[in-house]
Image (cartoon, rainbow, N blue to C red; front, side, top):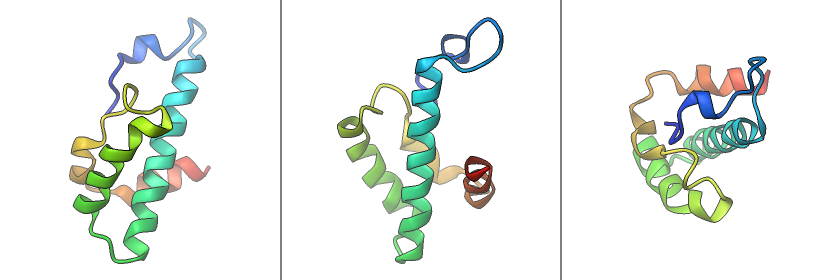
Length: 84
C-alpha cells in the first residue's frame, strides 16, 4: 500500500519521520473511511474505489496506493491496530 520504501519513512532511530507520520495518517483515515462505509452498506471494493479517487485531494495520492486495499483479509484487525 505504501508508495515509498519504508526506509524513506523512518529515522535512523527507528521512529517515523514526518513522511512516515503522514503515511500513517493516510492509512488510518483510509481504514476509518472504508470501515465507516461498511457501516452504511458500502461494499469494500466500492469504498476502495472511492478512496483511490479522493486520496489525492487529501495529500495522500503519492503516499498510499489504496488500489489493492480491498484484498486485505482482516480490515477490522487493521482498524483496531490504528485505534491503539
